[in-house]
Length: 297
Image 1 (cartoon, one colour):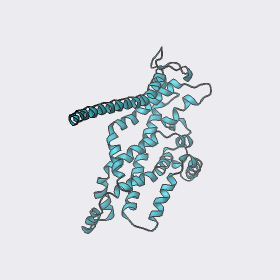
Image 2 (cartoon, one colour):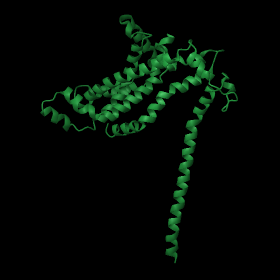
Image 3 (tube, one colour):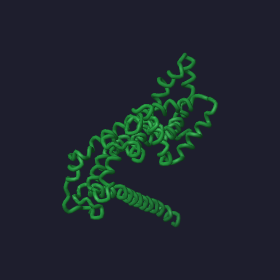
Image 4 (tube, rainbow, N blue to C red):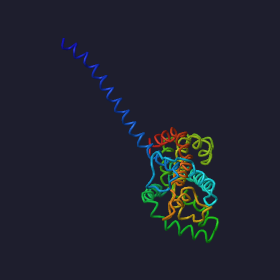
């Protein structure tokens, strides 16, 4: 009798533990979703609130309207859509240049054996460990002097900013790309070389098509990183018509007596749309590419 009772109690205890686990998972999911959405709700509330003072913001504003969006998009003093165009332009070109340089450098580190290879890899990783803020003065000086010699790459040029972005993002991207390339069998290279293929043909015809997952990851991360960057863009771009969206929106909060948080919130919501769209569409590729590239370093 005791054995039969214990057998009947076990399924009930298992069901009870499963129910408790399911409830806990739902509670955790609700907490995380609330924690993520709550700041967005406040930003949207500030965007539709005609009150410009941050101290008097309410989650549900009494006189909600879209006057802040109208002010942002119609006032000629604030070229918001020009800032957005500049952000998309700089981010896209920086991403393309980063992918080109990173892919070729990672191929060299992964497939070739040359003197100083390990030293260069460790140096790249060491440089990435320092915050970008430490290099602001050096970057400003380099771009200024470069502009004296070749003005299209100097201060207040998108080309100079793209050059800085592309170089700054290469370190970690090279390690990600190299780790992914190391998972590709070398037998592919050797078979192609036996058939008379050159290193460039092996890279462009065989290896490059296999890099699609990690290329997608690096492209997305590079685009998002440069799109939302503020400090370097604020340092190198001072002309209002050349500024990016992140820098341009500062004008609404920088003044001591002329802060307009409602217009700033409206601009922040519009500026976040490209990033949100990219994440929603390509989130599976981001996770898949990172996990595959982490199999072997």
